[in-house]
Image 1 (cartoon, helix red, strand yellow):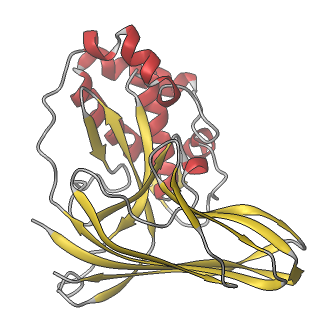
Image 2 (cartoon, helix red, strand yellow):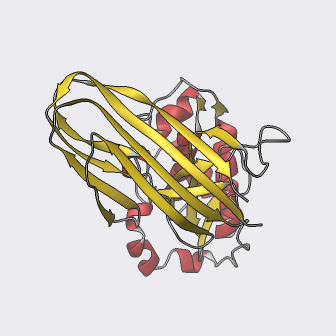
Amino acid sequence: MTWRIAVRHRTGYHYSSAVRASYNEARMTPTSNRGQQTLESRLDITPAARPLRYLDYWGTAVDAFDVHVAHTELVVTASSVVETAGALDPVQGVGWDTVTTAYVVDHYAELLAPSRYVSFEPEVETAGLALAAEHPPAEAGLAAVAWAHEQLGYERGRTSVHTTSAEARVAGKGVCQDYTHLALAILRALGLPARYVSGYLYPITGSTTSSVGTTTIGESHAWVEFWAGDWVAADPTSLVAVAERHIVVARGRDYADVRPLSGVYHGPPAESLGVKVELTRLR
Protein backbone atom coordinates (compact mmCIF):
# COMPACT_ATOMS: atom_id res chain seq x y z
CA MET A 1 0.00 0.00 0.00
CA THR A 2 1.23 3.50 -0.89
CA TRP A 3 0.59 6.46 1.41
CA ARG A 4 1.16 10.15 0.80
CA ILE A 5 1.94 12.08 3.98
CA ALA A 6 2.53 15.78 4.62
CA VAL A 7 5.07 16.52 7.34
CA ARG A 8 5.56 19.78 9.23
CA HIS A 9 8.42 19.78 11.73
CA ARG A 10 9.12 22.94 13.75
CA THR A 11 12.07 23.16 16.11
CA GLY A 12 14.36 25.80 17.50
CA TYR A 13 16.11 27.48 20.40
CA HIS A 14 15.52 30.41 22.71
CA TYR A 15 18.41 32.46 24.16
CA SER A 16 18.39 34.53 27.34
CA SER A 17 20.03 37.41 25.48
CA ALA A 18 20.89 38.15 21.88
CA VAL A 19 23.11 35.77 19.90
CA ARG A 20 25.35 37.65 17.51
CA ALA A 21 26.15 34.90 14.99
CA SER A 22 25.59 31.21 14.43
CA TYR A 23 26.34 28.38 12.01
CA ASN A 24 23.71 25.67 11.79
CA GLU A 25 22.91 22.38 10.08
CA ALA A 26 19.37 21.05 9.68
CA ARG A 27 18.67 17.40 8.88
CA MET A 28 14.92 17.68 8.53
CA THR A 29 14.18 16.87 4.88
CA PRO A 30 13.01 13.30 4.15
CA THR A 31 15.15 11.32 1.76
CA SER A 32 14.20 9.69 -1.54
CA ASN A 33 15.22 6.07 -1.89
CA ARG A 34 13.80 2.59 -2.28
CA GLY A 35 10.31 2.57 -0.82
CA GLN A 36 10.06 6.35 -0.36
CA GLN A 37 9.89 9.43 -2.57
CA THR A 38 9.98 13.05 -1.38
CA LEU A 39 7.63 14.99 -3.66
CA GLU A 40 7.93 18.45 -2.06
CA SER A 41 10.20 20.03 0.52
CA ARG A 42 10.65 23.49 1.99
CA LEU A 43 12.68 24.95 4.85
CA ASP A 44 11.68 28.20 6.58
CA ILE A 45 14.21 29.85 8.89
CA THR A 46 13.73 32.69 11.38
CA PRO A 47 15.75 34.94 11.35
CA ALA A 48 15.77 34.67 7.58
CA ALA A 49 18.72 32.81 6.09
CA ARG A 50 19.52 31.18 2.78
CA PRO A 51 20.57 27.55 3.30
CA LEU A 52 23.03 25.57 1.21
CA ARG A 53 21.85 21.99 0.68
CA TYR A 54 24.22 19.06 0.32
CA LEU A 55 24.30 15.32 1.04
CA ASP A 56 26.44 14.28 3.97
CA TYR A 57 28.70 11.22 4.20
CA TRP A 58 25.70 8.97 4.96
CA GLY A 59 23.49 10.31 2.16
CA THR A 60 21.34 12.56 4.33
CA ALA A 61 20.11 15.91 2.98
CA VAL A 62 21.65 18.72 5.07
CA ASP A 63 20.67 22.39 4.93
CA ALA A 64 23.60 24.47 6.21
CA PHE A 65 23.04 28.14 7.00
CA ASP A 66 24.60 31.12 8.81
CA VAL A 67 22.76 33.77 10.81
CA HIS A 68 24.67 37.04 11.19
CA VAL A 69 22.02 39.27 12.77
CA ALA A 70 21.39 39.50 16.51
CA HIS A 71 18.56 37.17 17.57
CA THR A 72 17.05 35.68 20.72
CA GLU A 73 15.25 32.85 18.93
CA LEU A 74 16.17 30.51 16.11
CA VAL A 75 13.23 28.67 14.55
CA VAL A 76 13.44 26.17 11.70
CA THR A 77 10.32 24.72 10.11
CA ALA A 78 10.61 21.93 7.56
CA SER A 79 7.56 21.14 5.41
CA SER A 80 7.47 18.21 3.02
CA VAL A 81 5.21 15.77 1.19
CA VAL A 82 6.39 12.18 1.07
CA GLU A 83 5.10 9.10 -0.70
CA THR A 84 5.79 5.90 1.23
CA ALA A 85 5.29 2.25 0.37
CA GLY A 86 4.46 -0.92 2.25
CA ALA A 87 7.02 -3.28 3.73
CA LEU A 88 9.67 -4.37 1.24
CA ASP A 89 9.89 -7.99 0.16
CA PRO A 90 11.88 -10.18 2.55
CA VAL A 91 15.60 -10.26 1.87
CA GLN A 92 16.98 -13.39 0.29
CA GLY A 93 19.54 -13.69 3.04
CA VAL A 94 23.13 -14.69 2.51
CA GLY A 95 25.24 -16.88 4.76
CA TRP A 96 27.82 -15.88 7.33
CA ASP A 97 30.54 -16.74 4.81
CA THR A 98 29.40 -13.71 2.77
CA VAL A 99 28.78 -11.35 5.68
CA THR A 100 32.22 -11.97 7.16
CA THR A 101 34.31 -11.58 4.00
CA ALA A 102 37.21 -9.14 4.18
CA TYR A 103 35.48 -6.88 1.65
CA VAL A 104 32.26 -6.59 3.67
CA VAL A 105 34.09 -6.08 6.96
CA ASP A 106 36.24 -3.34 5.42
CA HIS A 107 33.44 -1.67 3.43
CA TYR A 108 31.14 -1.44 6.45
CA ALA A 109 33.82 -1.03 9.12
CA GLU A 110 32.22 2.12 10.59
CA LEU A 111 28.90 0.30 10.97
CA LEU A 112 30.51 -2.65 12.75
CA ALA A 113 32.40 -0.63 15.38
CA PRO A 114 31.31 1.11 18.59
CA SER A 115 30.29 4.75 18.17
CA ARG A 116 29.51 7.67 20.44
CA TYR A 117 26.24 6.24 21.77
CA VAL A 118 26.67 2.57 20.86
CA SER A 119 28.78 0.71 23.41
CA PHE A 120 30.22 -2.80 23.23
CA GLU A 121 29.58 -4.70 26.47
CA PRO A 122 30.42 -8.32 27.38
CA GLU A 123 26.77 -9.09 28.16
CA VAL A 124 25.59 -7.80 24.80
CA GLU A 125 28.43 -9.47 22.91
CA THR A 126 27.61 -12.81 24.53
CA ALA A 127 23.96 -12.53 23.55
CA GLY A 128 24.90 -11.56 20.01
CA LEU A 129 27.34 -14.41 19.50
CA ALA A 130 24.73 -16.88 20.73
CA LEU A 131 22.24 -15.63 18.16
CA ALA A 132 24.86 -15.76 15.40
CA ALA A 133 25.56 -19.39 16.26
CA GLU A 134 21.86 -20.32 16.12
CA HIS A 135 20.64 -18.45 13.03
CA PRO A 136 21.72 -17.34 9.53
CA PRO A 137 22.42 -13.59 9.23
CA ALA A 138 18.96 -12.20 8.36
CA GLU A 139 17.18 -14.26 11.01
CA ALA A 140 19.90 -13.50 13.58
CA GLY A 141 19.47 -9.77 12.89
CA LEU A 142 15.73 -9.88 13.49
CA ALA A 143 16.27 -11.96 16.65
CA ALA A 144 18.80 -9.38 17.86
CA VAL A 145 16.31 -6.56 17.36
CA ALA A 146 13.73 -8.56 19.34
CA TRP A 147 16.32 -9.10 22.09
CA ALA A 148 16.92 -5.35 22.34
CA HIS A 149 13.16 -4.78 22.54
CA GLU A 150 12.90 -7.18 25.48
CA GLN A 151 15.63 -5.44 27.49
CA LEU A 152 13.87 -2.10 27.85
CA GLY A 153 10.54 -0.78 28.99
CA TYR A 154 9.24 2.33 27.25
CA GLU A 155 9.38 5.30 29.60
CA ARG A 156 9.92 8.97 28.88
CA GLY A 157 12.23 11.03 31.04
CA ARG A 158 14.55 8.25 32.19
CA THR A 159 17.14 8.94 29.49
CA SER A 160 18.32 11.85 27.35
CA VAL A 161 19.71 12.33 23.86
CA HIS A 162 23.18 11.74 25.33
CA THR A 163 22.38 8.33 26.89
CA THR A 164 24.49 5.45 25.57
CA SER A 165 23.23 1.97 24.79
CA ALA A 166 25.02 0.65 27.89
CA GLU A 167 23.41 3.26 30.16
CA ALA A 168 19.96 2.53 28.75
CA ARG A 169 20.43 -1.23 29.21
CA VAL A 170 21.39 -0.75 32.86
CA ALA A 171 18.41 1.56 33.44
CA GLY A 172 16.08 -0.90 31.71
CA LYS A 173 14.00 2.01 30.44
CA GLY A 174 14.09 4.37 27.52
CA VAL A 175 12.52 5.70 24.34
CA CYS A 176 12.94 4.86 20.65
CA GLN A 177 16.46 6.29 20.51
CA ASP A 178 17.57 3.98 23.34
CA TYR A 179 15.95 0.90 21.82
CA THR A 180 17.71 1.72 18.57
CA HIS A 181 21.13 2.23 20.15
CA LEU A 182 20.85 -1.06 22.04
CA ALA A 183 19.75 -2.87 18.88
CA LEU A 184 22.75 -1.43 17.05
CA ALA A 185 25.05 -2.64 19.83
CA ILE A 186 23.94 -6.28 19.59
CA LEU A 187 23.73 -6.26 15.78
CA ARG A 188 27.30 -5.02 15.50
CA ALA A 189 28.43 -7.40 18.24
CA LEU A 190 27.15 -10.41 16.29
CA GLY A 191 28.87 -9.17 13.11
CA LEU A 192 26.12 -7.45 11.11
CA PRO A 193 26.72 -3.92 9.80
CA ALA A 194 23.96 -1.78 11.28
CA ARG A 195 22.93 1.86 11.00
CA TYR A 196 20.68 4.29 12.85
CA VAL A 197 17.64 5.57 10.95
CA SER A 198 15.78 8.68 12.07
CA GLY A 199 12.48 9.99 10.79
CA TYR A 200 8.83 9.93 11.74
CA LEU A 201 6.20 7.30 12.47
CA TYR A 202 2.61 8.12 11.58
CA PRO A 203 0.73 7.16 14.77
CA ILE A 204 -2.18 4.73 14.87
CA THR A 205 -3.95 5.22 18.19
CA GLY A 206 -7.59 4.93 17.20
CA SER A 207 -9.97 4.21 14.37
CA THR A 208 -9.82 7.73 12.91
CA THR A 209 -6.14 8.68 13.11
CA SER A 210 -5.24 6.98 9.81
CA SER A 211 -8.09 8.64 7.87
CA VAL A 212 -7.14 10.61 4.79
CA GLY A 213 -7.07 14.31 5.63
CA THR A 214 -6.51 13.77 9.34
CA THR A 215 -3.66 15.74 10.93
CA THR A 216 -2.03 14.12 13.93
CA ILE A 217 0.58 15.35 16.38
CA GLY A 218 3.61 13.12 15.92
CA GLU A 219 7.24 13.14 16.93
CA SER A 220 10.62 12.05 15.68
CA HIS A 221 11.20 8.30 15.62
CA ALA A 222 14.20 5.99 15.24
CA TRP A 223 14.78 2.44 14.05
CA VAL A 224 17.59 0.33 12.55
CA GLU A 225 18.73 -1.14 9.26
CA PHE A 226 21.19 -4.04 9.18
CA TRP A 227 23.00 -5.61 6.24
CA ALA A 228 22.48 -9.30 5.53
CA GLY A 229 23.11 -9.36 1.79
CA ASP A 230 20.83 -6.31 1.49
CA TRP A 231 19.55 -3.76 3.98
CA VAL A 232 16.83 -4.99 6.34
CA ALA A 233 14.78 -2.43 8.29
CA ALA A 234 13.42 -3.24 11.75
CA ASP A 235 11.78 -1.21 14.50
CA PRO A 236 13.05 -2.33 17.94
CA THR A 237 10.70 -0.06 19.88
CA SER A 238 7.47 -1.79 18.89
CA LEU A 239 8.63 -4.54 16.50
CA VAL A 240 6.04 -3.35 13.94
CA ALA A 241 6.97 -3.75 10.29
CA VAL A 242 8.81 -0.79 8.80
CA ALA A 243 6.34 0.17 6.09
CA GLU A 244 4.09 3.00 4.88
CA ARG A 245 3.85 4.68 8.31
CA HIS A 246 7.65 5.13 8.58
CA ILE A 247 9.23 8.21 6.97
CA VAL A 248 13.04 8.20 6.63
CA VAL A 249 14.91 11.47 7.14
CA ALA A 250 18.51 10.55 8.03
CA ARG A 251 20.91 7.66 8.52
CA GLY A 252 24.20 7.35 10.41
CA ARG A 253 26.17 5.45 13.02
CA ASP A 254 23.99 6.69 15.88
CA TYR A 255 22.03 9.75 17.00
CA ALA A 256 25.11 11.97 16.81
CA ASP A 257 25.04 11.69 13.01
CA VAL A 258 21.35 12.51 12.55
CA ARG A 259 20.50 15.37 14.93
CA PRO A 260 17.68 17.40 13.34
CA LEU A 261 19.22 20.77 14.23
CA SER A 262 22.78 21.38 15.36
CA GLY A 263 25.41 24.06 15.16
CA VAL A 264 27.67 26.53 16.92
CA TYR A 265 26.95 30.10 17.98
CA HIS A 266 28.38 33.10 19.83
CA GLY A 267 26.19 34.01 22.77
CA PRO A 268 24.51 32.86 26.00
CA PRO A 269 23.40 29.30 26.82
CA ALA A 270 20.46 28.06 24.75
CA GLU A 271 17.14 26.73 25.96
CA SER A 272 15.01 24.51 23.76
CA LEU A 273 12.13 26.39 22.16
CA GLY A 274 10.22 23.14 21.73
CA VAL A 275 9.57 20.71 18.93
CA LYS A 276 6.29 20.18 17.14
CA VAL A 277 5.67 17.58 14.44
CA GLU A 278 2.42 17.44 12.48
CA LEU A 279 1.66 14.56 10.12
CA THR A 280 -1.26 14.62 7.68
CA ARG A 281 -2.21 11.64 5.57
CA LEU A 282 -3.11 12.96 2.11
CA ARG A 283 -4.00 9.61 0.57
